[in-house]
Structures are given as structure tokens and as C-alpha cells.
Length: 216
Image 1: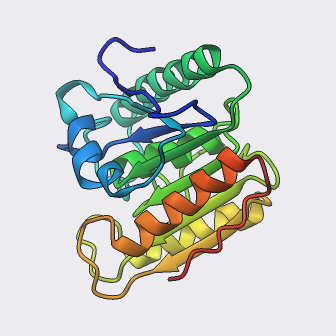
Image 2: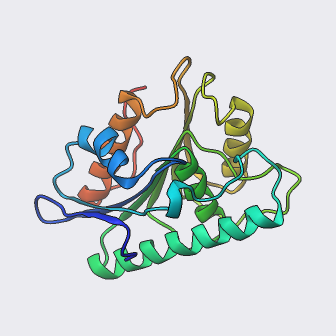
């Protein structure tokens, strides 16, 4: 895996893998302390990719795509695809959850829509598609992919309209979607979202179906 990624071994025998992508201006260490430390997931191995300079691409997710943004986004997707592939190689056939927060959630969504090797589930905490609806963007989502998408009416980076557009595209792509809006929630991962992350990881580690049944 990328030498810059942060690797967290499972406390017990690993039964699932989580690749968790940080947001703009953040780091894997912040995702560990702000999100993953709130989990009880001793049988999950975590891989946290690291963006050079703390950003996966320079533009806002809701800006129209430019040549520069496309180039940066493709480089970020290549890096993420490499981390996912090497995580799978290291852990064999274990189920994998791809997750991310903010810009990391947007990158995780773009990974799924790009038709790259699909995870068993995806969690996009405060995410949307990169670009605008009139941009030429891929729509190669794996059918029936379980996706958990969240947003907030008070988030300064991802407006509700962009969240809703992403939900529509996931539905059109035949994703198995649960989408939650958290009124008034700031730019953070709430306790309810952490509970859903734990629910997803427990389902994957147990080898059963993905229920996405945690309370809002």
C-alpha cells in the first residue's frame, strides 16, 4: 500500500477491512482520532490513505470540472485504487468498506462511479459528486452496492442540493442507498454517523448482509 498511508492493525483476527479517506486539509491521524477512535471494531483492519499537501484536488466539489481538476482527481483515484488493491492483496478475501469524510467522501463516491474494483459497501459522510450535472462524468456504479450517504443543511462545503443530486445518481445507478440529512450538524461526523459506520463494519465482519439499520 502507499508508503504514506496510515495502517491500523486489527486488535483480534481481522474479519473486515476499512479504507477511510480523509477530507481537505485533514490527515489520516485526524480521522483516526476524530472518527475511528469512537468505534468498537477490534476485528477490522484500517487503511487510511494520505493526500499530498492534505488535499485530493484543489477545486470545491461543487465547482464545474476543469482540465486541472480532472487531472488531480484522476491522480487521487489512481492512488486510492492502489491502496484498495494492495489492501485486498494483504488481507485476501476479507470484505472491504470504502469510507470517507467530506472531500474524502466525494473521492470515495467518484471511485465507485468510475467502475473501479467495487468494495462490499461504501460510506460517504458529507459527500457529493465532484463537478456539476452537465459535466461529462462516469456512471459505472456496481449495481446493488450498499451505500450510506450523509449531509447537513448547515454544512459549509456540501450543500443539500449537491447531496440530493448524488442520491439521485446513486438511485439511477441501482445502488442500495440509505441517505440521512442531519439538520444543524456542522462539518463533522456525528455520533449517529459513527454508529452507522460501526453497524456496517459489524455486518461485514459477520459475513452477513449489509443492513444499514443503525438509528438516526
